Image (cartoon, rainbow, N blue to C red; front, side):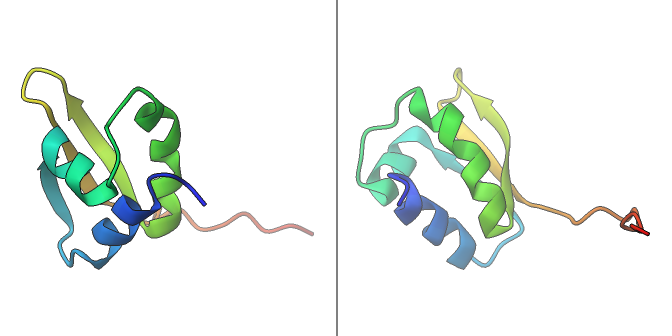
Length: 78
C-alpha cells in the first residue's frame, strides 16, 4: 500500500477530469506531509486513471488530469 493511496482514492472519486489541489489540500487528504517522495510516487496515480499534469512550486499546487487513453491501436503479436 502506497502512503499516498488515500490521495489517489480521493482523486479517483473526485468526479472531475482535471483540477488543481494546493500542497496544503494534498497533505490534508493524504494525511501526511508532502515531501519529495511525491515525485517518485506520482506514477502510481496512472493505475487510478489520472496523471500529474503540472507541479507549481511558486503557486504551491499540483494540477491533475484524467488520463486519456491513446488513440493508437495496440500492436498485434503474431
